[in-house]
Image (cartoon, rainbow, N blue to C red):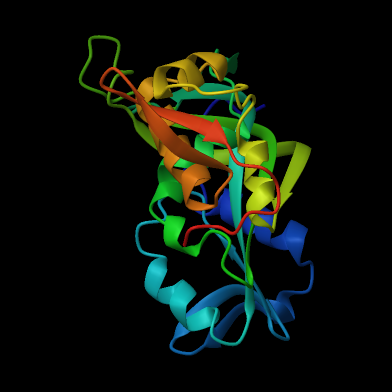
Length: 234
């Protein structure tokens, strides 16, 4: 392999997912209601978001008036890192990251869209796949890694696809929903999540009536699982 790297296409991950989900380019980048849909075939729209969901709400409001919308989000597992010398462009050896992505990684971004979860016509597709990050070693730390710029993400083989189309499907974002009553800290421990991200996932699960608050234990809120069939709290 060439040990130098030039400018990569900044949208490689997005383009790869788009071509995987819809091979026919005639249905790519379709203008509709003042926006551009990544994929539109009839009244079915697929939006691929590889980063932030912060600016999606107005677009979703427009699209969901007359179409179904599937929001696609990639999760990296396994993830590899290749460092790029900022002067010579030389590439380091590809190394496997200790971080293992999982579907619950979507929680922070999905929290922004919790008002859409369970809404008719809205669904999620979480694609877990191998990913290689190319990062320019130009960060502020002595070794140049902390604060380094990510140049590109190159996707590899897909290992799993999780489709979420009903309120109860959101249960699959959690590895475990504890039995009985539990606190946010207990939920975080059971799911091996940092407390902050566990809180986002709890809020999502509450918004679709998968779990609900049921009281207090000292100063901590208590939660419990909601039986299947309950209506989501939109």
